[in-house]
Amino acid sequence: MNWKTLFNPFENYSEKALLIYGIIFLCINIYFQQLYGIKMQSIFNEKETLKVYTFQSIIFNTLICNLVGIITLLILGKFINKNTRVIDVVNTILISQIPYILVIPLTQLSFIHNASNNVIKTVGKIPKQIPPLGDLIIITFFGTFLLSIIIYSYILLFKGFKTACNMKKRLHVILFIISVILFTLIYSTSYYEN
Image (cartoon, rainbow, N blue to C red; front, top):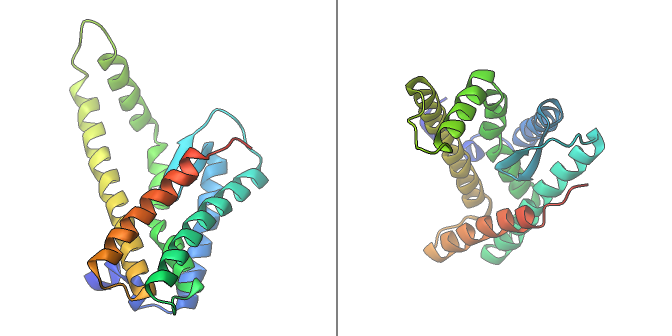
């Protein structure tokens, strides 16, 4: 595997293989949501919740969330290139989530939760106190790692969509960015508790 494959698997793997991997990781995402008590708010955003959700509601919510992204990008893809295929857009949405899904168990590690809670408690105090250095180091390293994973996920989303609809013009890139913001906001703001 080289860098090109890592940052654009859509050109090197068959659509069938990408779909199979995408569905496997979609199932893993659903399992992690059930296991850790989190719920998907958009394709790269999950929220911890105190409410216990049924497995069926987690599946439904995850599928709807993915569907919003798929429909939004499919409409844009058809606008850019009428030959854009549904399978390519589905693969783009599913594959771009894989790095983010793999990070979910890391966010649940107790030492990360403890460090985060310690920093929040310290920052909220009056007079202001300096959080423990060890906790700041943990939060800084984990935050940097998480940010790099999210950026990588967005790179996969961009590269997959670019490949799916043969996007070449700057206007198309701007429309893609606006569409991603829109489908993230549409689902996050219309997020419901079912």
